Image (cartoon, rainbow, N blue to C red; front, side, top):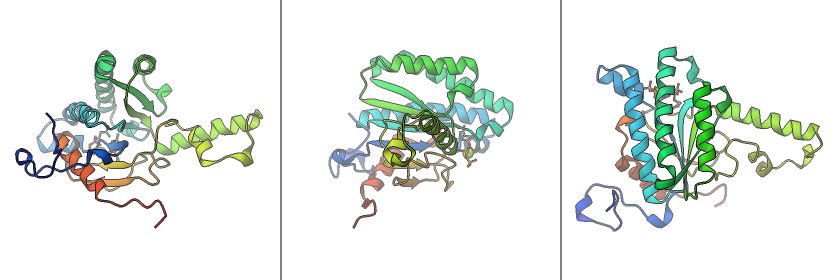
Length: 254
Ligand code: IPE
Ligand code: IPE
Ligand code: MG
């Protein structure tokens, strides 16, 4: 019935993480890293790693939905990733198109909605239009589960764009500078309306944020694993959640 243990000591699921389904994170962020190294280890082109990583994304997205986690945010393409060779960028854009088309067709039936974090206006026009269509379709879907795809996303870029929008509201007299609160500023970010991530996961052995949700993950719990993203599985996700559930979050209190 499920990939995870509902009860302690389920003999059929030996070695799997035991999850407390009443204490799941509401929002998980994932830095989907390690596609290139996964491909290189197999003597394949890096683009084969991205294709494999996209399949993993689909598996993990459905797993989060099935667990009952309301928000998943994935880092798909950063503002810094434009530095890569043009063929690699274009292969990634093609994959994004393919998976967005699939998502568009399945959203309603499968009960999820997609949103984008990042500056989608700077994407190739065809992909940008597909993003807009996905948003429009999603706005009519009554979904309990939302996937945020970080696309042309950089946390600093997001904060700068938010600051500019806020400054314009100040200049136009809509808000007073001295009244600004953290909650007000959050509403200028791409992530407006989305609760902060409780758990941020980075596979591939790198121990850094790489510009992923710096504002929103100020109090997130972090989980790092050496597993490369194409090898990431529901079992690894469950281990990350089980680890999260063993932690005590204090938010500065005692
Ligand atoms: C993550 O995998 C995917 C993107 C950044 C688009 P990488 O392509 O960064 O894979 P590695 O880190 O080179 O192995
Ligand atoms: C972060 O991975 C971006 C995405 C996963 C989309 P990178 O591979 O671009 O990050 P760095 O270069 O290792 O910091
Ligand atoms: Mg990488």
